[in-house]
Image (tube, rainbow, N blue to C red):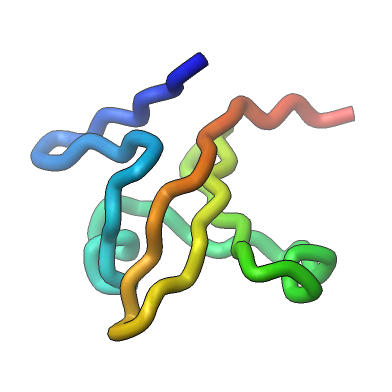
Length: 72
């Protein structure tokens, strides 16, 4: 299942790469979860979507997975 988050100019989808500045302009922000620091992935959020990113060299991030967040 592929999820797509649309923005006015760019689409965030699995496999896309973005810089930190591009993510900030898209409104994608890091979450406060510390558990992801033990893995080589980081968790970001945009609204009710959660985006798992893999850090790459040169301050880039690759989108691994996008899913809906449902509060407990």
